[in-house]
Length: 163
Length: 155
Image 1 (cartoon, chains in turn yellow, cyan):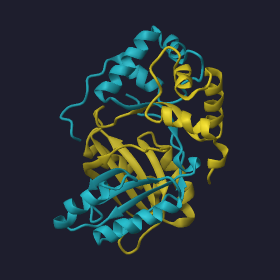
Image 2 (spheres, rainbow over the protein chains, first blue to last red):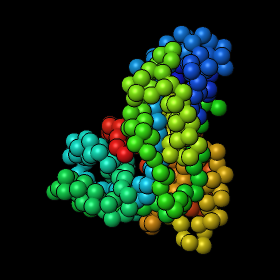
Image 3 (spheres, rainbow over the protein chains, first blue to last red):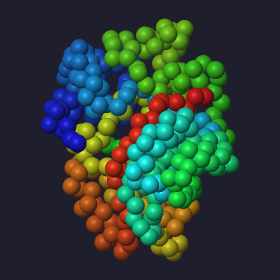
């Protein structure tokens, strides 16, 4: 689904001005407005609309798991019956140690997994015990699963959404 | 992962991070509004946020945009690389500006990266270009469904 038609050049300018972060000022939306040539009220109205439309997911802080001591981040992946995957994904997404949960296509025979859940813990053994909780919840609908730990960050530039 | 020990946070830092993972107000003086709820002065909150960003405890503070709803393309892709090819392919893959994140993982599929493109059509083109440039298959795994996850990481 694309709502690119629903945003105009001023919205794009606001996105460009805020995609790296909101200014840490007494009146941040006014600061953004000065940068893009809009009043504070216009910036606030446009951002409220983008929030309502889901173009902005949320406004807030993104914690850095590694820096905060969550050193054991594992991508848990599962081969789950297609008929059950949707309902089970909702259950897994509701676990408080899961930060992302998706259905993705399999690539058999190299890759049999369709349910992805990113699990966070203070070390790998904590992640492994959390993966066990997921495995138990998936029950008979799950044929197999694995935990893929990251061993190295090769690149991390963040998404540049609007050039 | 590349940090020996976690940052030291006090209870106020933790309260700020826990309180600000979503729902930051769109108002004339939003830091003052949030500071009041936390029993802080506005400037103290701003100073703390700046320090948490500078120290790397927070990777970002602000609006999180939904890439696909802005009309762009987004996918997760993986490659299965022999050890001797890994560094060469890594340099090629990271050279694409569309590659936003790239992680080495301990699996047969040992390289995992996120592609973010200006248009949805560009995803297939970039994958094709990476395959041509590296001589290795790229497994494209675009999400078919995203489950809602609440905002947590309670500290």
